Amino acid sequence: MDDSGFDGDEPGLLDDAEDKGGAYFPITYITGMFDYFRRHANDISVLTYDDFPWDGDFDFEGGYPAERSAWTSGLNSGRFDKSKSHVVIQYDVDSAPHRTMSLLRHPAHRGVPANVMIFNRRIDRKRLRSSGELGFTPYDFDEAYLRTLQKEGFVVGYHTNAYEQGLHNEERALLAFDEDAHTLTE
Image (cartoon, rainbow, N blue to C red; front, side, top):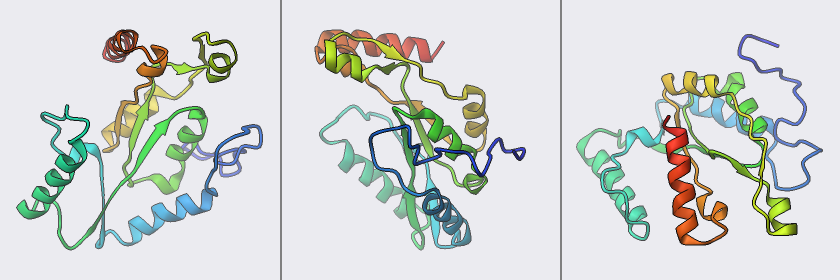
């Protein structure tokens, strides 16, 4: 294993045979994309959520047009280079955080920032489906490494599952959201 913490032969990086669901890209496809972004840095700019203004971002229905408008304003003001294509990478760290952590540690990811969105707790969806009971499963990610990535321009944020935690009850969902926010900001 090299000093990045990535072992190139690590099994299951994106196609773990033990995981029985979902579709996964071959690792060479994704790492090749990162290499491409670096090789074409004169033509492509990888942005993160820190590059956008988020004041007043509480209108779910109208949020996307407002976000596009903020990006367009950035182009018009010169904050974003009009001659480049702009890319935003986001990881929603759901059921396989070990995959995301392995990909984030991959040497090809160096210098290509992304948004990494994490739950506070991961719901045991099998249990929820089979019994209707809310439970949680282990949700392991390397918090120290995520903090290091933040210093390198990555954004780590909250990926909510509060509505699911509240069993689709708005009042319980708001309580779950508040609890998550409190826990993650301690």
